[in-house]
Amino acid sequence: MLMVMSCVKQERTHDFSSCQLALQALESREEHREFLEEIYRADQGIRDGRTGRARTEFGESSSEYQELLHEFRSTDRRNFHCIESYLRRHGHPTIDSVGSLAASAPWLVIHHVASLEQRYHYFPMIYEAYTRGDIDEGQITLYLTRMHLMKFEEHFRLEGAYYPQALIDSFLVRLDLLNRAREIEELIQ
Image (tube, rainbow, N blue to C red):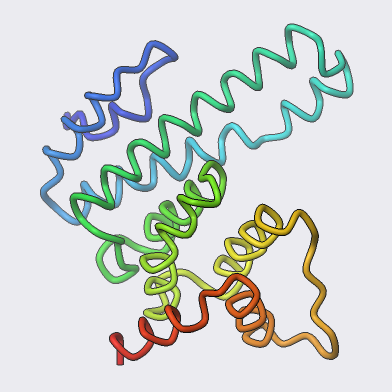
């Protein structure tokens, strides 16, 4: 059995070099899909409501809640490291090559853990994936919403009727990304 998933299945004693080994072993589209889907499942698996329940039941200063936060952060760091390495080595995956679930793993992991600086760094790749149709309007909107919240420490309100592209364009202007987005769109056409 291929050990492709080793970087995301290991316990807390995870060695990040295992992710590099797994990446080197990826050959087929199916292996890429499995690798990315496992990261996606790990990302979503820790977001199952346990931290909210632990906060409510035991309180934020409880050992139960703190242990879950540690697990949460550890999983997010591990996933980010694996996705960052994957993107450096293979670029952003396409739906055609790995399917929609696997193609959405990079933006989702970056969305959950990246700093504002890292979000700006990955914006061209994420926006290109959106322009190609590999991530959808809702996903790019969440990515930009979080960027806006991190940069301005306030929620953005779109005046007038809501149209997804109008909201995306408003974020691009506000985050000073409109010119970069238009350059990416021209390259894709």
